[in-house]
Image (tube, rainbow, N blue to C red; front, side, top):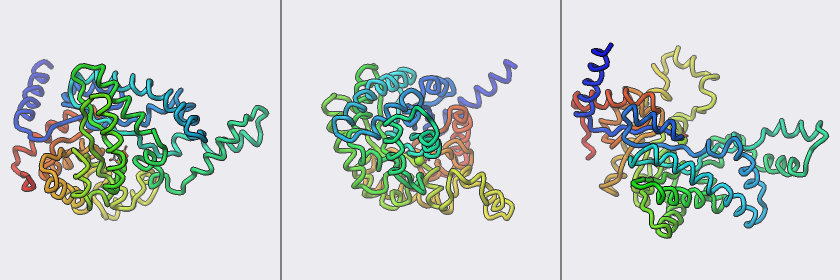
Length: 357
Ligand code: PEP
Ligand code: MG
């Protein structure tokens, strides 16, 4: 068994020696961050912050949603800020000075608010219905969307709820100031236009300047329009990270949430595609969007950092594509890090190199 461990270790070191792609992890907790370090991750490429608003903190989210004045909103955000700060301190500490890309909150709202049916049933049948229940039901109805995945998510939420993104940026900056060597990168989700990004960026730059903390500010490229206008978007972004889960959903027009239940398996049987485009990056369609964004983004900003953080970042064939198109790094779940390192090395050895640099 020792021989085997040594052999695997030798292969991994060989792959690390030849690969050009960096390998980062998708990790949202200090535990996952530490695990990803053990697997050899060189940073976090995607720290999703949505889950940090669940559990006990749901009440604060409800308070935020119910806030009808700027003071009430401020009060809810002021309670969330120190909690977020401690979340980020834990992650920066676990990463020991490696870069950490923190994505500002990107919740499909329906996952965060009470279920409309549960709440209606409670109000209709329970004895201890509060005024808050009524106000929540009104809010949930007001925010109800037919297509939450195409709705009030990501940057849209950040622009619609004043102070929400600012609270997160302040928490990131304060956490970074307390952890020596911390290297935060701030990532804006679901951007479709440079105007959205500019609005958020301006505020983030101001907060960073106030706290004296340096952080790259960049964006996810996960809406087709963002890929198609990458030259403009790169003017306001120091890095791009391809969110190929959403990019695949929107390029194909397939709901991410319904693929298992729907016609997908029939499509596989019919050979419309050999493998799900959510598993292996579809080079002909989604890949073209990535190519366009890489080319136009780098033309506008030669030092633009480019990565991928959709599930494809840990899929062997997709890793080869990422190498060929000239990305700087892939980011994937901690358990897929060894595969990503190995495939990055194989891609470098097989010579399919980028001509976009
Ligand atoms: C993506 O869309 O590829 C992505 C990484 O973001 P999420 O899966 O959180 O939507
Ligand atoms: Mg996404």
